[in-house]
Length: 188
Image (cartoon, rainbow, N blue to C red; front, side, top):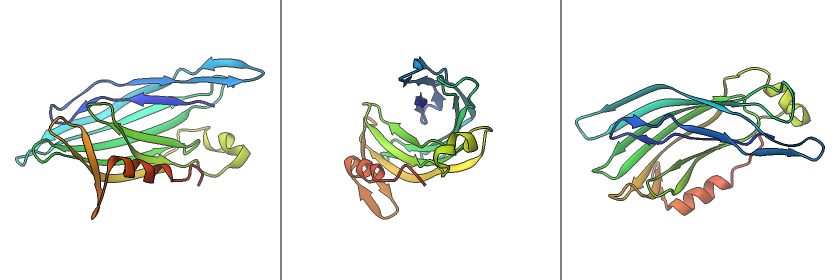
C-alpha cells in the first residue's frame, strides 16, 4: 500500500506558492519487509489575480503520482487536484473550489490548512469498485476519473485562522465540518 502525501503552501493575497512537498509513508509487508515509495508532484497552471473588491483568486493543479514500492513495476497511483482559492482578507473569507481526478483507486483525502496548522477536510474520494482486482483494473494508466468535487467558504479571523465553514445556507464550526466529512464512506 502506498500512502503518499503532498503539501502546497499558497498565499492567494500575495499571489505566491511554494513548489510543494511530497512524501510517502513506509509500506510494509510481512514477507517483503519495509520500503518507502518515491512519489512525484508537479504544480501546473498557476494563476493569481486580484479584483477591485479585494478578492484574490489563485488557481493551480497539483499532480501527484507514486507506485507501490513493494511490487516491482507496479503502476503509479495518479491524483490530479485543481484548486481555486479566493481569499478576501477584509471580509475574512476563503472560497474553496476543488475538482479532483485520477485513477480513483485507492481512496484519497484532501485537506486545507490555516496559518496555525489547523486542518479542514476538503473532501474524501472513495475508492472506485474493483474489489480484489482494483489495483489491476484501476491503475495501469493515468485515468481522468472524477474522484471528488467540493465548493465551500471558510471564515477566518484577522490572523488567517479558520473559524468556520459555510456551504450554501448552512454554517458549521470547524469541528462539525470535519466530523461531517469523516462520516463519508471510503468505498463507492
